[in-house]
Image (cartoon, rainbow, N blue to C red):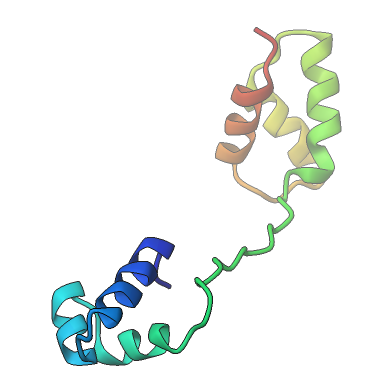
Length: 103
């Protein structure tokens, strides 16, 4: 998907009476892409992907509780939640603990 600035550039070049091939050469886009964006009446809106739930989500409250009790290592917390059924990797736990650890 083109950025809004690129769409505006294509519209501007078209208003200067350049044909699609000339616009494609100037912008470096394919002719079909130029044609597609010339047919749009408004600037394209970016598509927002839905966020997926993390494997760690069900265990985050437990990790936060344990971190408030004392300074536990992320590796130890990983082993504890693994015993509770967590089937994710150790890195996701380390990254989460690094982000939320009390300073």
